[in-house]
Image (cartoon, rainbow, N blue to C red; front, side, top):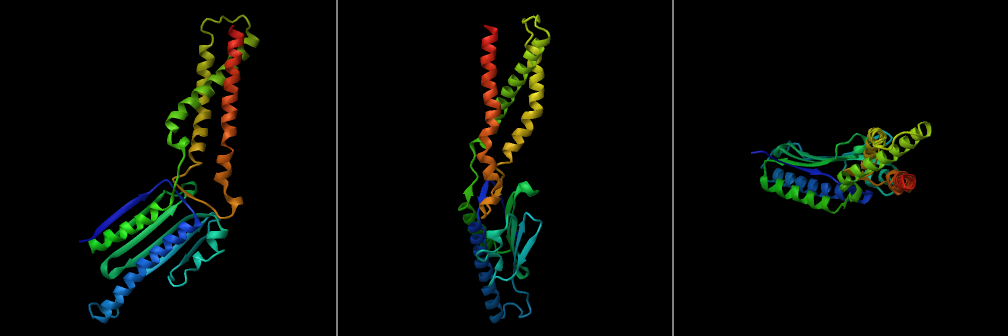
Amino acid sequence: MLEKRVYRIRNRVIKAADIRNASTVFIDIYKKLLKKHNEDIQSKAISQYTHQPSIKFSIDTNDNANYSSDNPDNPELFNANGILDTKVITGFTYYISYYQESLDVTLSLSDSRYGGHSGTITVQGTDNDWVSATFQKLQDCITLWESQKSQIKRYRWFFSPILLLMTGWILGTIIYYLVLLFQPNLSDNGSWLIPLLVGLWLAMSISLPIGNYIDNLWPDIEFIPVPEHERVLTKKRAQLGWIFSVIVVPFVISIILELIFRH
């Protein structure tokens, strides 16, 4: 009976060393399958013409290039100062197949900023013990990768309404005092309500794109480029304080103005 197990990989930060370590795990799995294949041929459990296990490594980069190799003895993709150290990685796939026993092992990850859909581990085969052991081995490899930690992303459901209200208040206050410039005798009895509602409506069109922008600064799967000048997300996160300053500072000023003009 064929058994298939799938594990969804999310919220991980992947470095070049992690990609190399994962390839080492795959090569180890492949060589054990190849050893068993050769032993079965020697014992005549299978025909000498039976196809041996196959392995393939594939890496995608942000310049729309793809690099692949099916040589486990010399996987040049992982050489020092090679692709992993000079290119911006956007995804990779490792694959092992052994038709004789219906075995398939796949590790696939892609950066969601480049149209990817997170990552998966897939292990299937007719040997249930092998499937279970291989699946656990790959999971153990993944747990060593750094977690994607962000309090802002984790509590975005809390920050988003605050961001919306603050932006709405700022815009509403600006609209209110602009109206007062042209209508200085405008009654103060409830006159602030309409500008505030207009400000909230405008804030929604501003806050939602800002919220999506902030959310995308911490993708589910993030590859850390070796060249520091290519670490775009790191730079954007460092500049995130400016975004909040643009909102928080005007908010405080608008409160002060409100207190001055109302009293």
